[in-house]
Length: 258
Image (tube, rainbow, N blue to C red; front, top):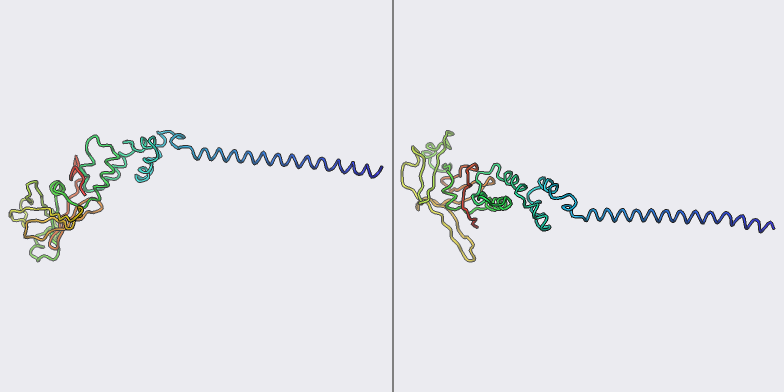
């Protein structure tokens, strides 16, 4: 009898322990299920299109704080994204930021009715252009000065080296002529013409490219500065385009050239 009573008492102790273990496992299982559900919900939220989540107006404000290159990448996401990311209200301030401090604004970028995204793209492309055109020569006023290698006589006539103002200016005209300001001692009233020489080899590649004043003077190599201004120079003298970014209608060719 005593042995039986002891066994019954042991069984009474084991049963509660098993129940507690099962309850603990159930709780842990439920906890894990809740965690998995939360993870799935978070994943769904992360995978949701931000444009659908926030709406066009809020996304437009977000895109306004991104750099132009980052905004341009969002154009490729979808048609809906393209519609928001190509908005004139988004690209107008970016164009203004791009043009700030630039010496010249390309005529092709300020055509009336042109979308601002296109204006930005054309501006960047034209700013990298190093092939000067007749429109560039004729649209700008050019500062002219001698380089230090010329005889002292000419340096003494040059306001650039004397440290006086105004500097000498040159003007290119549609008929191929060039003029200077009245009273320019260096100019002397002689006739002057210019030409743009472009030598092309196979497959449209440019072999030689320069601007020449009269046939007997050394040709000038052309370069472009970071502010989109132009410089033409040879060993004797240098031409620099005078900034005119404020000019209505822009400057340079209407159609881009390579």
